[in-house]
Image 1 (tube, rainbow, N blue to C red):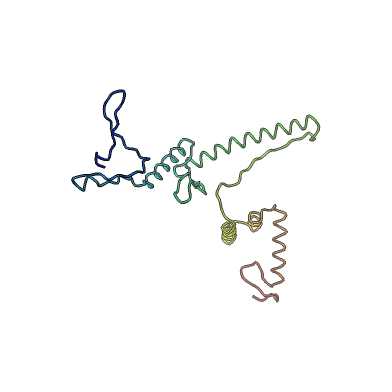
Image 2: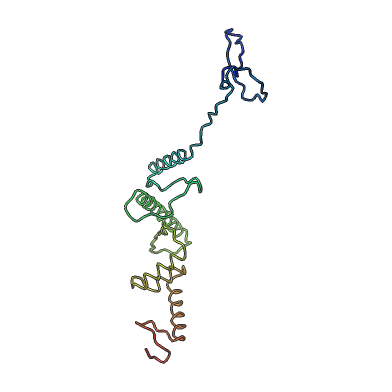
Length: 209
């Protein structure tokens, strides 16, 4: 804006005239200028740098991943969904998989030792009969798989002969081996009533192929 739009005030300490602009002043006044260009107010508004800010956040998240032992990209920021975590960890030897295994090993050792200490204490107090015992700790896979994908994967493995039906039933239905065997027997009995055999092909109830 032209200098005529800037107010002046005398500094009582120095006695010099200083110019200032009151941004909260809502009063407008007409100015007499020889040229129209002096009345023109130039807009200096800076555009929002959204992409640059998102890139900066992702760069900081990548630094954080490096500092805590995760692979770059395990944490990312999206302007529509915010911070997102990786939904699955690939099986290759990357930093994220190595970090997870290291943490699991430490947790397994801690949990096993704690359980052994509790069992020994229970034996000493007579709460548990003396005897040999074995403590095992197992973690579920970190890969997030929906139910439909889990069922389809088991169907493909059973069809290819790479997995037994009992193991597939145990994983899909989240049951033990005995329950899986009973379920398989029930399926076989229902199929026998319908005249379907689990051989190389289909047979009728009369036994003709």
